[in-house]
Image (cartoon, rainbow, N blue to C red; front, side, top):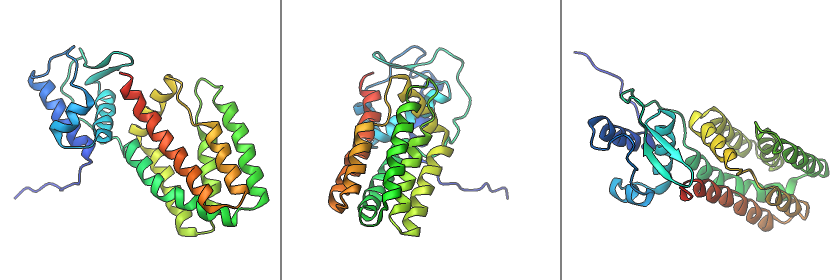
Length: 230
């Protein structure tokens, strides 16, 4: 008896495979524009962020072309290769960060040191310099959030946040999407980071939590706007 390992599959990959099968069968032809994100989400019974992550996976595989200001089209390239699991999706990671980092920021407001506040201000200057570069890495953005995780003074929360950023950095799906956002001049907001610092400096947990919530929700909205402009 030959048995194969049963693996849990990411939802975006299941969506991408359905669309890929329609392309390979010829039901959706080369050069044809895909239905709107809302329509695909309704027909597939998934969230719009899941559809967005599926589109990124299909683009990486060369199945579709995402054309800013025009739409998403089936590629004219030869199709047939299997889709690969490209790691955790950027919208899933943002959802998880929203849950954990907002609470961590509230704790940090009670425990952060003067030295850590100054470090955050220095990192924002690094972010401003990074964003001037064509191949900006967003390393400073990660450092900013990890300082706050450390300032929360909870080793478990610190570990979880570091793990979430590791997932983001190790996911090819997330990294490719970050590059797409840079291509249309979408970067982490400097003003939002400064608002977080101000709230932390005041030692106000609720204000700090709100500042982080606004920042991550804004990042999610900006990421979604990439598709809404199509």
